[in-house]
Image 1 (spheres, rainbow, N blue to C red):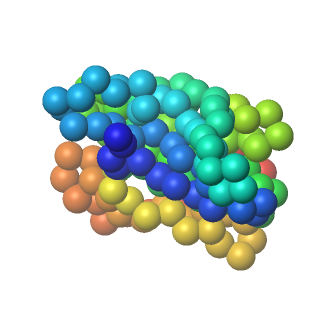
Image 2: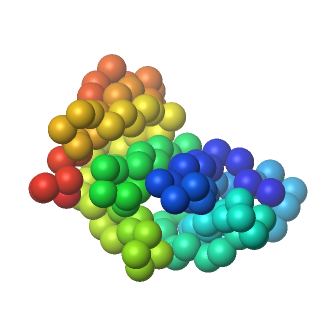
Length: 139
């Protein structure tokens, strides 16, 4: 069981499920650092790599080249994350993708027509009234 995870529809029809936590009464913390891909053709989940750190309340945005940008969220200690990672479907692995100016969770991430990603709002303890842009050419 997961909560506060993301599910991203990939161009080939599979679904990337990233991070999330689970109710405190269950021992499933590994879900928060493990990603899986669900294949509707076989109705099975396959491993899709591990995040560098736990994330819940993050965003996952499909990029034009088929990679997925994973931004922010909360970590093990409940602190809000400023880091970002990119999942590559060809290697089924994550790599660092830079950092936000400030940690945030519960934000939105929108793909812009030029391939950049607009990251807006969320919380870093208190509500945020700010926005940042992630540029794939700069990471």
